[in-house]
Image 1 (spheres, rainbow, N blue to C red):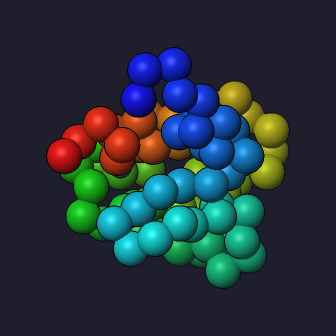
Image 2 (cartoon, rainbow, N blue to C red):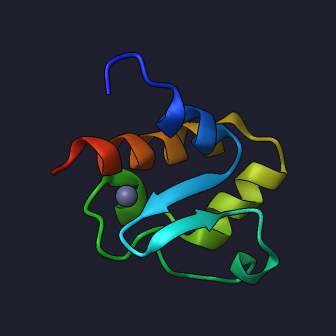
Image 3 (cartoon, helix red, strand yellow):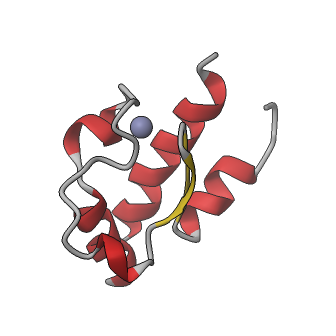
Length: 80
Ligand SMILES: [Zn+2]
């Protein structure tokens, strides 16, 4: 993973890697979704935020969306 931009670049563009496949947070079906990005993931983002909240932050242009999703994507890739 050294120096690989994939987890953070995709997070900035609203794409999350989950145990059930890729998930684009921009998708309208997540507008009222109370589930965490990946229900099987113990990372801090998945323990504290919903898909709906991440989608809201992302579409509002909030940098915290990229930060939160980067945490999840990095956790996903680094955890065996
Ligand atoms: Zn997570």
